[in-house]
Image 1 (tube, rainbow, N blue to C red):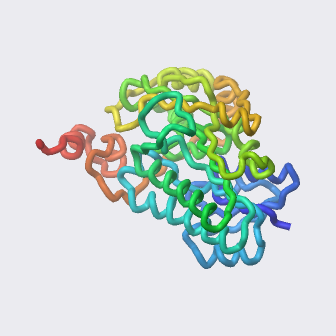
Image 2 (image 1 turned 30 degrees about the vertical axis):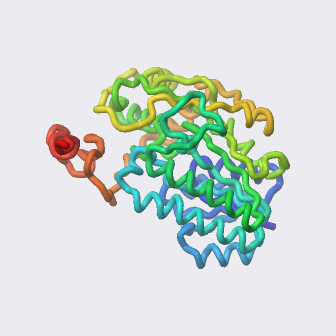
Image 3 (image 1 turned 90 degrees about the horizontal axis):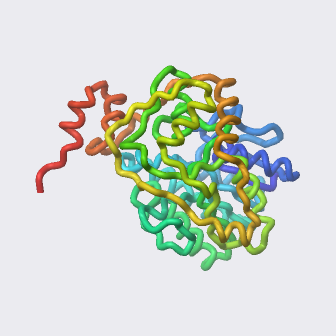
Length: 350
């Protein structure tokens, strides 16, 4: 019997959550359009349907057929920086697709809807960021995630749909798509090193992040529905110790056993310090991340070396070119960085 739907279960976080659910004896159906995931990521024992959360008829068919008790919504295009330039795509996939799932969950009496949001909802502000911190997202990705959180809250108030929302941050590990040049800095660094390229860092590399191994979040996401106090709550989950991007690059090179080579690119608009507080997750969920960054990177490096380098994919359906980082533009258009900096980055005088 299929008990749980996992969207994005051929992707990074989703495949690990699906695996945890199967280990606990739950029946799992994975729904994924394979736009960013890989069929080999789907864990053995899970049913698989290739399809999109934008396909309302497919969702209706699956919910009617399987009568899911739980929905784990992991599917998203999580490229924060790129989301500025693909607003329509971002909101269609990350907001409208989520609303389609919420509608189906309400109409088919799902018991609990688990959603992976993001610390992108906070934006730049006081650190550490707690769940009580007023959200102020600074990119379209964070805006969409916050809107889905709001939809879940009002769906609980109007229709009684229980939910658990997680705000993970800077997750890395085995099965990450290292070919995606727009997100997941650890994967980007490892792929660049395997290809004999320097690791590219936007700005001076002083940005601080706490990097979280997948094994520290997937199990707690999977078992959240079994924790009554977690219902209708929002939780930050992730690592506690921040590292600069410069320090990360050194640790990645060490884990890969390859020379440390970096190339600094012009800075892009991004939060400089992102450090959430996890007291609530520790108190309510018993959450306690235990993977040291060096250990997690070594585990991921071993997996990456086994699978080899991948050709970095280009996102071609850009909606706004203005102010895009020159390195992204150059890759898409073949134009020289200097020309792009002159034509795209210099704003008109006010």
